[in-house]
Length: 404
Image (tube, rainbow, N blue to C red):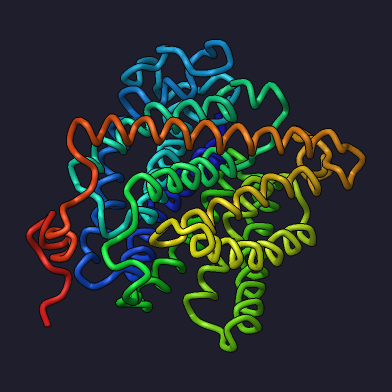
């Protein structure tokens, strides 16, 4: 084991953990004042609930011995056999360090989904849905890509979670938005963010934490981590500018919300590619992500679904573009464990990336629809019209965010 690598990964795990409270602020500022605590609570309670689910069963389903390329076995149930000894295949780290790093990914992924059903979900139904989703959607996806499952065998490249985190949450978010229906008054009255400085602070925390997310996925304090750190930052910067320019042309003025949304879009898009591409392609990926995700946000108006905080437009289209861009720009000069992409003489990699995109969207959307139906039957999933009008803060938690 390597002490420097272990220290680095533990710090990265802490950075990824900090992203979930950052997401709480990012989402919390965009909803109406009567729903700010309910929205923040979604991310914060996930930090507690999903951590326990991960320790008990999620980790073993993700990284246990492979069963048919689809799911992990029960080798590590209840973290049995997960201690300070090295993990097989990751000899430089204590097994517990690898496990807790992956735990933080499992935490933030369902938290991303909460933006789609903000302001209208029942808290009991939300808790049950989250537990089931981590077991039946996230864990299989994680195993497919990072745990030795069929997508890994196919050769799909996903350095830090384009499919596992972003496309999976976005496909599930789309299912949630469709199943729960629109918020009361949607399309008839304005739904304005109540506290944009809160959102900007949350975006800044996300940008900061993302360095742990992507650089930490090198699983060592080495040159690959430095490369992933740099590509992450440059893609975010380029995407923030790209979104701002497109919005400026389209709406006539640049906005603060647009700039930070663009930054998040760039961070999403570079996530699958961060450890496989050089800096200039990362800037291209980010720049295009800004425009693509800006257009993606407009799709909800075209198709009529109410994705409250634009999870589909940013994480869905950003993650999809990033996965495909990995198939274009990946080069073994950055990561010898990866593959070359189309622009480096390997067009087959782009096809593999496309298969991973389709498989992720299809599986996560269908499974989420099934889970939503189960939860709706067991606990109910949407608050009553009366509770929705009161706001989630009062109706679900008997408190208010501001005493004015």
